[in-house]
Length: 149
Image 1 (tube, rainbow, N blue to C red):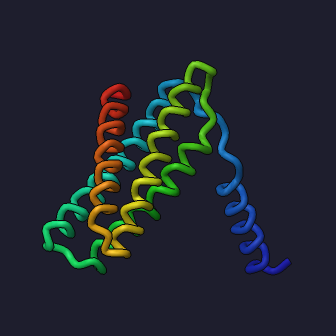
Image 2: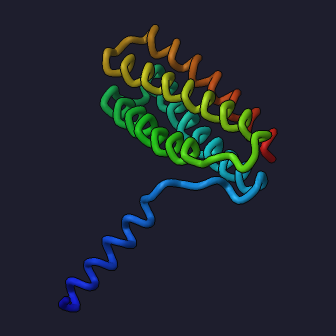
């Protein structure tokens, strides 16, 4: 085997190892840390969306700009959900935490999709409704963040 072929084999093996299934969190503290990170990231996306919606509704942002920001926030939330969802709780006592965080992030995902659709349609009433959903998500994420420390 040539040197470059061997290097390629090593790189492929390493890539497969790094993209394999995610195992359980090592302990409850680690799992709570993972939950906290997911919540903080979700909160950041929700706050960004809320801000741009307000800007668009006040005619301080174009529809194209709001569309890009909302689409980016919605797209960014998918990997946050996937990453946390792939973490297996260390113990059954953390199952409720998993369900709660994934429910909050799922509700946020729906709200962001509603906002994206409304801004693309220039639907002011729909965007206001989506912003209410996003505000609810912000409240839920803030409460979750507070309970996680």
